[in-house]
Length: 72
Image (tube, rainbow, N blue to C red; front, side, top):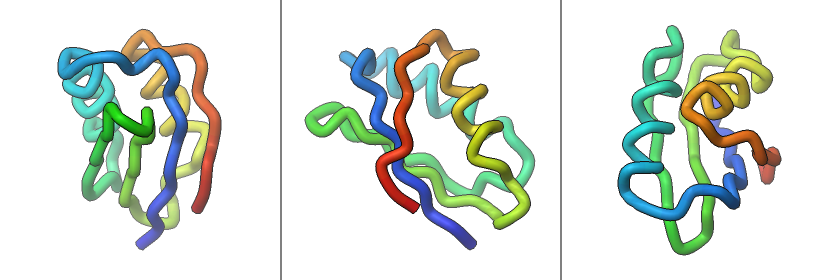
């Protein structure tokens, strides 16, 4: 199991959290998603087989284009 953290500066409200959580949890192998408005961080716990690029694409699909990997 791996946990990655992403910075999403466009995440401003609970609607944003819900949209991102819905898209990312739809990926096979994602175990949990936790988003924090105060830090603009999204923490994703997932199987090793889930590529970082797929998580970023899911966040983009939710409507948030500015995504940076903070840590793994």
